[in-house]
Length: 230
Image (tube, rainbow, N blue to C red):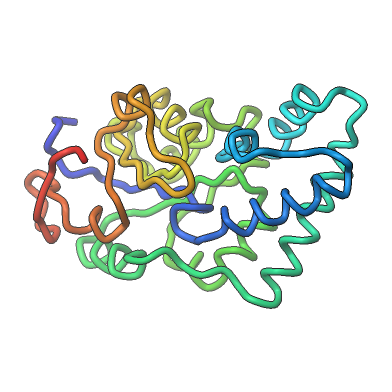
């Protein structure tokens, strides 16, 4: 696909990209880790962003030792987050509704590729899930991000070749996965901004989903404004 060509399909990450959930999980992990008599600095938590549950278990063992009760810790994190979400919900990221509407008006196929397992993804997305043709979750692939598996599976279900897909991601692991899949990717940073290396892997870096909606898309008729990297 030429550099300035519009994609045939757009693949969305979920946590931190469409829904403002990463701050909820960060709060839950901070509370839970203290109950397990450990500390988790921000830079440690950020290593888990975009990763699926098995990879998180492996990383926990690497950081805190093989004797660390990773399953118990993750269960407690989920419990704290679940309680918060049940009370307060999960807000959508600014610009999401307008971006989805714009894509729908132009007949663009849309998929979700999230490292979260399907049960949690359905709960987190709620009615929003009906606006996507495809939902691909972390429990459906052997390797999580930064491996390309979840994006390749999502593209297959969208009946689009990898080079015809555009990925929207907030995490370093997600950008690496999209690049490995042979897809263009726009990073919309959430808790962590891009390094120079991640900027080089991303096609664009946008400050918000509203900026994604108003950027240039080659010959498409999307609302246009700027296609420069930021």
